[in-house]
Image (cartoon, rainbow, N blue to C red; front, side, top):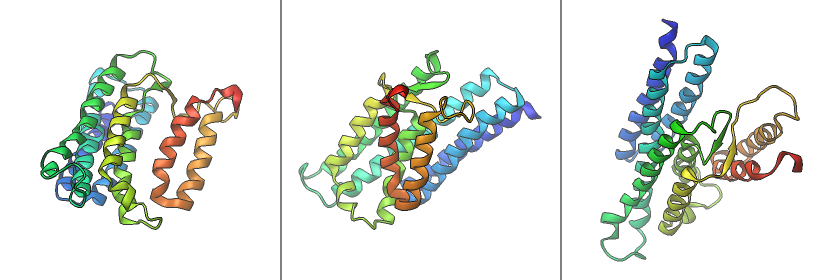
Length: 236
């Protein structure tokens, strides 16, 4: 029984991703965003449970990748499609009829997420850190936008629902998914400052920003995650 427990948790990740896709196309974007948060939690716990129980398996690895393709590949593309549709409904900068075809550019994120996951599966360098933005990080950024729109206390709707901004984010993060940018993993080797400087700094920032800015903190945290990763430990 215990050897199947991590796979069950992975399937819950996949189920949340499927539900998120459904709610995205029902225009219930905030519900989809919360489902993605659950998928991220399950994605974290399946690996941790597998390590605790010492039940690693090849099928578990493949299942995890397939689940991630839905929850962190299809979902961000579908979310961006809907956000682009919303932005183009009130913006005619791209000309008449653009709302019929331009939103499909959101699926560029899905394509590059697939490339990212395939690359990760074959890249032996990414055992204790990442090269390129992980798909869950990219997805959390995309699903944070409808949450910010629903709780917009800082007047950011005009920026988020600008098609140029959304297309720019799509292209930038499609590149970052498959880039050679080295990024630290949010795993603590131990509780020593010297061995976990970046993790401690990021955790502290996350607590402060989330308590202060709520969902608006998510894009800032993603930006800080990339920036902190690029700083050499000796410089901290």
